[in-house]
Length: 433
Ligand code: NAD
Picture 1 (cartoon, rainbow, N blue to C red):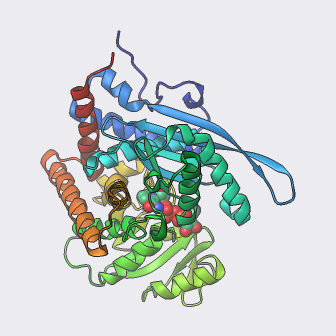
Picture 2: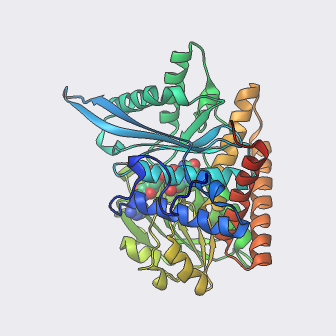
């Protein structure tokens, strides 16, 4: 008997059945649409399509948190392991008020294709806690983190599923996760998370790795010299801020940046380090004195050479895509462009370096961190940089070659390679029992 699932609905119980079109549901629809397109290109049968559309394990947990005033709040947490056929599950943990099971599932699916695309031996996972970290004190944040980790403890581990930072989490979060897991195990287990502080087994080069990958793929995609090319960056966090720095280092002129507090523009070029110092001091780009204010929407539509969306999903849509003037879009964020927008951008001749390629630097160096942890050994920054660059450039070139050969977009080519490798692994392993 073959199981068929409509392309927009994964075969999972109630939490994933159709529901209002939340941002998370839209992200999952985008991920399933991209999978379907790749499956068509690969000629996959219905059974395998269904298997690849269906997360292997989805865990929803209640996370009670004691607030400083003695009240108790309960927030939802999730961990989805989309696929573990090529190796342990791997993916970040997001703390954001609007995260939900749909969003986490989409992000986990993209992780599966990303790891396969860049050739690292991992499956895909993602985690999320529906909480605004800015609304919590540091002690509350630590309690939320430790309780969430305790709830997902049975399914994570260095050989099972290895979390990392994502939106709203950082090295400190990873340190608490490593400690919570290790206390339960009875010994130190640094390989349970990546993106850790150096003192706890972090890797040199991990903090800037996603952004370094964004820079490498931007320079690969850019026709001609980067000198003087204008850049706008949406999101000035762990990915966006270093990406702006690295693109400026390569000779580009970063003219506009936004974060949750606002957007700023200076057509003569922003001093990225000075802007970062301002953000450190004030909490956001809003009010930066050496630039003019801009709306969030206008930043995306600036006439620039390179646009780097590095915030959240679904920001380039059918509605604003016709007004996007950037010649090259390099997706630091996961899922920033909807399939409808993709079509419009492709018709307009805009090159989009897709998320699963452009932001893969993070998981590549996470993999290198995990390898160092499992060997109790460490590499120099230079060694990590060379390995990252090699994998990024090889992956970019393979995607560009397939895109040219088949006349498909870079996103379609990246999915054909990623999905194809996972499908091949399924075929070789066979179906148990
Ligand atoms: P982060 O929390 O460090 O930064 C997010 C940034 O986006 C912040 O500056 C925030 O103010 C800004 N932002 C939020 N809403 C915004 C809006 N509406 N307009 C403009 N800016 C807004 O998160 P991050 O780790 O930098 O992740 C950003 C994106 O990159 C996410 O899509 C994430 O999944 C993806 N990503 C992250 C990594 C990583 O290593 N951290 C790796 C691969 C992909």
